Length: 444
Image 1 (cartoon, rainbow, N blue to C red):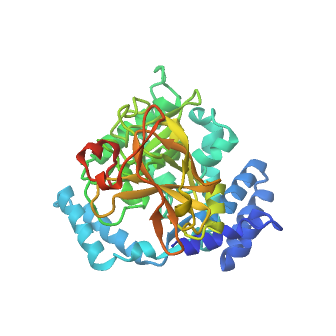
Image 2: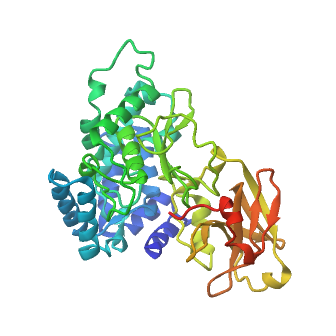
Image 3: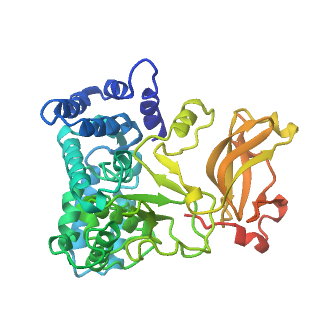
């Protein structure tokens, strides 16, 4: 997966041609589809903002990918039949899909293709036109700037492997009935939070979320299945919430942690932009209120936002790192929006430094797992004998790792970054002590 995406993404960084031109050159036989979008907004619909939106989608498209081939449609057809069978309980529907996944579709997640190679002009134009109309004409979207529109409303997908279908139309038709008969005397009438709460209630009541959090086969990433899914985990429903919000013109994004929560907090949740320009988070999916207290007792090493734009720091890493950890290119670090954070600069012993074969180093969070007690959450660089990292969440047990030319090895003792910003080193021999559990996160 990573080789395909990184090869395409690196092409966007060529200095002698524009990013858009570079992507067009990499599109192969699909180049004409991308060019048709640009031509459309230069001639038939001569709108400079829509043209810039099209350029934004194309220049960042190498970071995004979909399933290749037709097997995924076979799986979705099977899922549709299972979900339509009312004689099955949600548990039985889930287990049926898990069974067929293990039997026939276990390898599907590895069968991917860059969106650059397959996306069609009509699909992009339709997404641009609908999202732009929502931004221009919906009162609850008028507070966002054009740059915010590019990330909070425009993208044709919110997560990788999402099907390139008419999700805006499908989900709005299913959960947007309240928009047809708004309560005009309500103080929240035509506000982003008021409309979002209405959509959230409609989705919660319409989907009858059962909260079956165990593995359920492949995620259902097509809109017609998301609209009828009777089971799922919090990330499933958080994604559906983002898509429902965007379909109605509510600016929304999907945030996530790279490790499991310690208590009941979600690993993914949705955020909307209020009329006041405030980012209002749900506690997890549409079963919780928007803008309430976001788990005040929860701590974590990192929070990332799913973006459409390529993160330039991650792109530079993908070009230059000798060891390639599978960091997604379209993620933005928003940890400081949720937790107290610290810029770390950890001294590395000279004897250990000579074994590190790359300037890039890695920071891992301790997790409650005997098989794999550390989870990589970010990368940093070695500078003047120190491993440096930005915006690390406090009250977490960490370890620094480096590349020795063959694999990642520990290059620091484990340490706790305390709430008061102090660092306490821990002997690796005591890592399994129950006294350290409160500094660890769960596995995903």
